[in-house]
Image (spheres, rainbow, N blue to C red):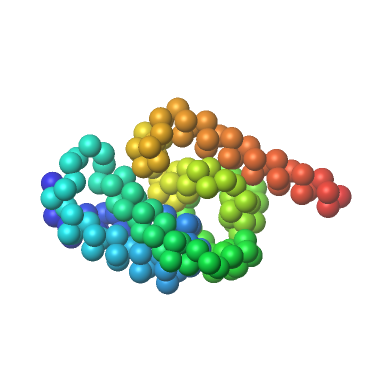
Length: 167
């Protein structure tokens, strides 16, 4: 097992980017990233090694974000507010981002159901494979592949319909 400093150096950017996509807020993403690693330090002995360290850290980060959402559950936030502070994020799925403005894509992603959004974010930002995504979300790798494909199709459909309506 690596020491926590090596783990932090290796995975902190990925965790931050994942949280940034979930939160659309740099401050919250930074705070939750630090909290993720604080929890990881405290519970490193409980890590069983059943999955990659990155998957384990993403699970911690996701649970922290859900905990944060539960604290703020009384406030209804619009898609525009969520997308307001989004920054450019390096992605592995550049084909989608080359066709449309990144902000538009992230707004479209926000319109997807929660599981589809999570799959897209984990794949694009977390740069995780479908096995890792399945482990995080408690599903099968095939489910993750299909969900990712369908989510991309929905985004493409929204963009194509929007272009047709503008003409």
